[in-house]
Amino acid sequence: MNQKIPKQKIDAICHELSERVEDLLDHLGLEYSFQDNYVCMPCPIHGGDNPTGCAVYVDGDAAKGNWYCWTHQCHEEYFSTLLGFIRGCLESEADEKVSFNKVIDFALNFLESSMENIKEKKPVSSTDRRTNVIARLEKSQAEPSKKITRKLVRQNLKIPAEYYVNRGYKKETLDKFDVGISKNQGKAMSGRAVVPVYDDSYEFMVGCAGREIREESRAKWVNSKGFNSGLNLYGYWFAKDKIKETGTVIIVEGQGDVWRLYEAGITNCVGIFGCNITDAQIIKLEYSGALNIIVLLDTDEAGIKGREKIKQKCGDLYNLHFPEIKSSKDVGEMSVEEIQELLVPQINEFQLTFNKP
Image (cartoon, rainbow, N blue to C red; front, side):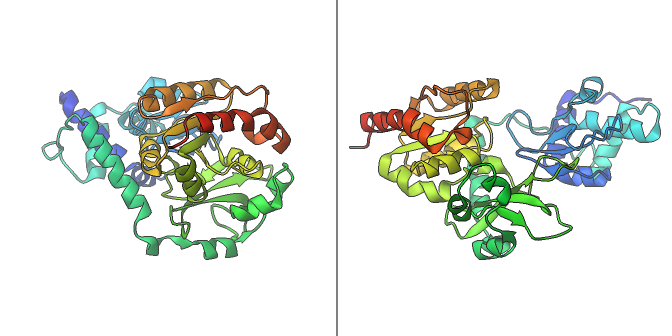
């Protein structure tokens, strides 16, 4: 007989599971790769073979603990919570329906807990949420002994990555940012163009992203295990001094945008690893000394939504400027000459208007 379980308890179990997503996937025997704020894999429920067809989010205020099947929309049948994911996996393995109580039993067994010991999750205030984010930021910058030194990073990469040289980036730029092809065979980054991300001191790597450069059915991008791009700003270790000097930070989506702006002589720029700025990145900007933000996200639909989010979250804290990009190209696709002609005058004018006294 099925036992009725209070919604508060169900929410609490989902929260506990969301804190241990990687362990849960290992427990289910699933292979996965890391992306920005989620892990991806072929959907284990309908038996897909697309390596990025299913995503389970490990970070993000709204998304954390949710999952999506992009190919067959399995999350619509099983619900997008981790309990729904577990149920789908169990039914796929057993080839029969599994009761919700059995799913709860599986989850509690994995958590090594009981219904009585599961504590109902209390609402988190904005102050507590900020405190939690700051703690995660501090933890990500701590314990350098567990991180890889920049010297070791360069030893394990063939720099510069010809993949990006062939796409028009200067060898000197790629060398400056330590972008190269992994020399390690049989590892997750094997055969990928690796983009290291360093801590604020520029001494240790906190993680890296690897771009697939061969015509293989692997995920286009993977992050190193445990690396959370949402806690970092790409290129901040280079940009921080210029940000303090000018009082202005330029926000772009990815590393290619940062590289191209550097080649055009613009060095107070950082990448947010996509178009969705996180609370942790906003807090890092607060510590940077910036008073003004210039936003240069892509002009597609996702970029437009990203700009709106920056307006909502940063509009009361900073002077915001959204330069008019009279080009169909994204920043990283523009030539240095195009950037100097179309963007640099707007950037200089804005910095003069709101420059620090």
